[in-house]
Image (tube, rainbow, N blue to C red; front, side):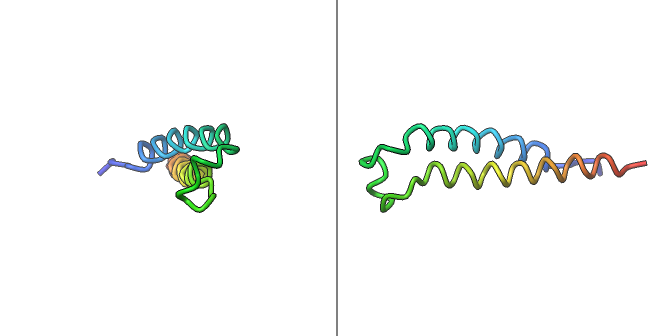
Length: 69
C-alpha cells in the first residue's frame, strides 16, 4: 500500500518543535516558570528534541521518495 505516515508525523513534530523551542528561548530567563522542573528549561529541550525528530522523519520521507525509479 502507498500509505506513508512519516510525512504528517514529521510535519506535526517539526511545527510543534519550532513553537516550543521559540517559546522556551523567549522565556529562558523566567526562573519562576521553571522552578517545578528543577530549573531546567523543559520547553526549550523538549522542543529541540521534537524538532530534531520531525526533521529526521521528513528527511526519511524525502529520501525514500527520491530512490523510487
